Length: 132
Image (cartoon, rainbow, N blue to C red; front, side):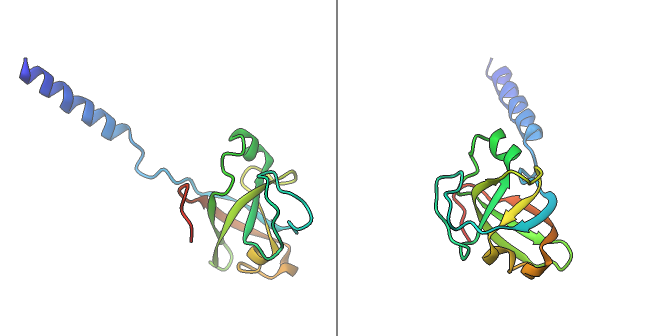
């Protein structure tokens, strides 16, 4: 009996190990733009300034998660020059696709000149509770 239970436990552990994803982080690619978050309350319920490193995620992604990514940090890379910046999710973006980000001027300028207007980016959410 003990042998049977031991084999069952080993089998269950093996199945769980194989089923677990190796990397839970999903990298998204899309376009990065900028907006001025000052003067209005974001969908996450905060008032931010254009000097805050904040992002608005696509409304489809925001709604799919019922705003569950609010206050979650994202790592953003400008794919053209390799520059990396971190922004905090504070709003949704109506004109953004699901893999696009709209950034505050402070954040966008860490990746490119505001005059650029739009850049190609890759990005991923950091773990909840993580902060740069």
